[in-house]
Length: 145
Image (cartoon, helix red, strand yellow):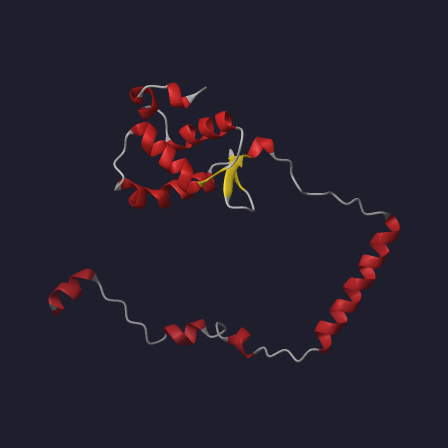
């Protein structure tokens, strides 16, 4: 859908994110936040003064929409054009044994460390902290005023 050929009335029915989606889809290349938002402002005939007041919200809306991805060069593109960089590593039986040894060594290091547990007992005496607490009824509070 070519948003540049749509009427202003049709565009006003779309969200900024939807317009961005169509702009990126039509352009076939990534674009930075500023250029995208300037294009939207031009299409919707928004005043230049609204750029600074709305660009932050626009950036946030793009970053929370799963259709878009922010690339390393600071440009936005459609997520469906990019593959995931995640690689799944299958752990074999021999490698699992090595992992267990590493866990045991790590545990031993923690046990040798001098751990200060004085902060752990801060909340043990809750009842003692509350012994001076006085509960005042709303009626009593009004009487004091």
